[in-house]
Amino acid sequence: MRQNDRSIGNNSYGQPQTDKSTHCAINGRVGRNEHPYLLLYHNIAIPAYFCYHIPMTALQQTPQSGWNITGHEYAIDRLRRALAAQQVRHAYLFTGPEHIGKTLFAHRFAQTLLCVGGPDLRVAPQTPCNTCLSCRKVMHGNHPDLHIIARPPDRQFILIEQIRALQSDSARKTLEGRRNVFIIEGAHEMNAQAANCLLKTLEEPEPDVVLLLTAPDPGLLLPTVLSRVQQITLRLLASTQIKSALQEQWGVDQEEAALIAALAAGRMGWAVQAVKNEDLLAERKAQLETLAKLPTAGKVQRFEIAQRLSADTDKTRSVLELWLLWWRDMVLAAHRCLDLTVNVDMRDILAQQATQVGMREAERMAHAILGTMEALDQNVNTRAALEVLMLDLPVIT
Ligand SMILES: [Zn+2]
Figure: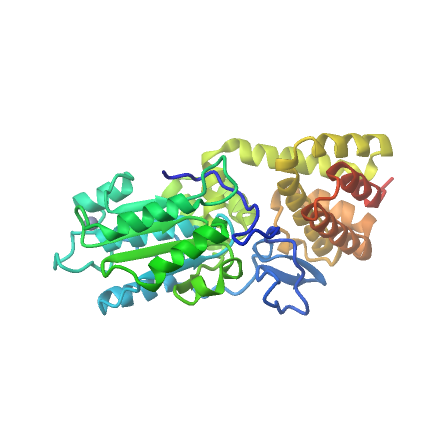
């Protein structure tokens, strides 16, 4: 039943849902309908995971190896305290940007809840032992008391049938463990029927049931669901923390670890993907090289790129996010803050172009890309929107 191939589509309530980067922050504050991952940075509202120079509270803490999670120490501590006091809630919601590690976190908590390697078999330990049969079953994805629910890849929503199955499973006795644990990955992808169906379980949970929901933003869930879950927000990691983890746990050499950590912008999951999939970095490099040439390109070449990019709409947003990051770096370079740029391997080109483009043009371009992303969320014609953006690009001779 487990499905990982998901993307943000419509929200749970049948309304068009925009991606995390489509709303604008106002003076650094966000309202209910505005996305919290946006920050004002040099007067440009961009997703917060692009700004990795934000306060990180967990920087100096030692990773807790039993949980096998890089970072998120404060969240682990919170759950450990609940476990120690035997006050585990019936439902949790883990939120945070894509690739920050919400699903992994939920799985590690589930493993801890089901672990039988602690001193007292009747209660869950504070840290999973990683060696008992239960831990191994969770890690191998075959523990009978751990149930994973996610949107099927060929469907727009998590289906009400999946939630009904959850209710049926939660009503029966556990097969092995002391609890029935359900992970709902991307809970914001429940449609209204499924969300309302889940409410019944949240309102009257069986004593041994624990529900672990993940979502990028609590605002994407029904208020009635939110009021019945314990929210835990996962924060962006410091690039130094990601770099160390890549070197120590993944055997990545220092130079590559520094690059990936910078590009990950606080998201360990993205960093791990980049290590596992070399194509990800190669594709990024190719995209940026094309982008770097655009200001010197003529209209015909720009329109060709708009046409090529619009042919693959699934990819358009990720390419635009890359472009936004590039122009955010250009703003910083124009402000002589090159050391704060994320594209550390392209700093020479950034510095060179920034002197020609200037601060105002760089800021204008970043705004133009954001405007294009918002327009695409409103279902405007992709090719037309990209052609307009191409004409907006500054010209460097
Ligand atoms: Zn164990």
